[in-house]
Length: 435
Image (cartoon, rainbow, N blue to C red; front, side, top):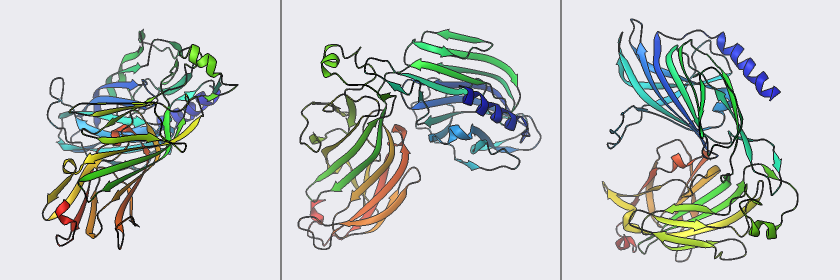
């Protein structure tokens, strides 16, 4: 805790010396920090006003450098208000910013507004920031019988280059079992929610450090590596194969493990372990299998409806902190649900990331295997990815099939969006009629 106080003291000294960047003012900021899983989500609704005479078209978002290192996803959207979320919302452009005279302790992003704000104009928008590896287990090692306690650190004041007229913060926890939390002026606790504020007339770059130490026995499932292979079959099928290298990313397990104690009282003698994971596969998924190096694993359950196919998988052994496992999931999908045609080219439209619920992926590699003879290949992804091409030779192939390889690090469920792979397939090909 001493190092925590020192780091935030240095941060406070640095940002207090930072000048205001414009005449923008945040008239209201409502922040909600969700600590209900090992993926931290911060949702903010803010109303920005132009108090100056010059037109403003961009708003800066500031994050402490240590927090920004763990940021996996950031999106800004116009605020729709209650009951107006039925129509698709177009995200506002967000890009990294590097204004002058800013301390190295801050990382800034610029949000482009739909139209410039003249003097007296205002605009309300929402920001969602998603962070991985932001919860620190305290203690770092626990026994089989111990519960898992984690620490989260942030600020009760919204860190911003602009003055804030009114702001509030709520911290939502998995349950009401709280070891300790920072108590400031206007702090209230309601069950599993801690509320800070409202605070009024807070100057720019204000920072008021808080720490919450609480119980969280939710699955800290982290895939150090996931390789997804999506192969377009000649025979009306999309075959998806996913190879997982998984670890429990919570407090390290120490001491001996007793399966007898675990089976007798799993909620007491294994509270910090997770016993199963859930994958939401696409509708009409078929031929599903789940296996590891030993062979098929029978401890899985599959159920589906018109909207999704839910696969519940259970590893061969309960996963305690630091324990690792590797397994493979495979399933088939109807080709007509994912392959389409536009302007003489065909394109695959499928989700990018893992179907696993609340899984953090340190490194994700997606391989799309196209039919032999495919050419003029291009990719449209909703976020930046590394990209290259390989060749795969399998049965009945002559020259091999082109493989589009996409790689992304620090992946969260918000990245499981649709992407497209466009390609041209010669209609004279002996297989073209199968599409």
